[in-house]
Figure 1 (cartoon, rainbow, N blue to C red):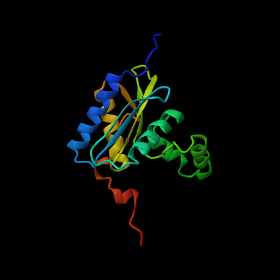
Figure 2: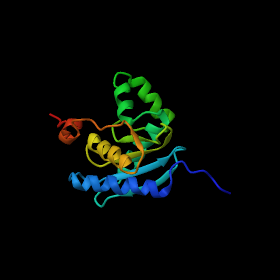
Figure 3: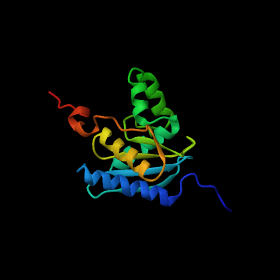
Figure 4: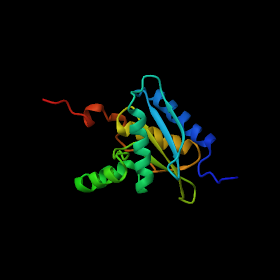
Length: 165
């Protein structure tokens, strides 16, 4: 049997290699990168040494949510900010696999057809998303969103996890 693959393994591996390279270049915390095809099947995954054990689940959830909703996980976060009931419903419908924070990026071809998604977890969500977007571009595909948040470099963990008083 011959099956048509939406995202070949060599391209998925190229995306992962570039995302990890970008993370090292930017001195990010250890990253976990997951690449899914258009059907939600994992094509490739790598965890850098030092990645926490839950990072795979977070990276997968970012990619899975983006693919499942047809929009980036950043856009999911933005649209659900004022809709907690719908966010809870999506979490239930996805068996808890939807992670609505930046770092889940759609992979599109030149015609805008979605081929899969990348999810990255390890540093701040904005920095994770930056690595995904630039790695997708380097592999010759179009990311959605097309550009990272302009403030990704200055994003810190305290922006996302403020210290408790």
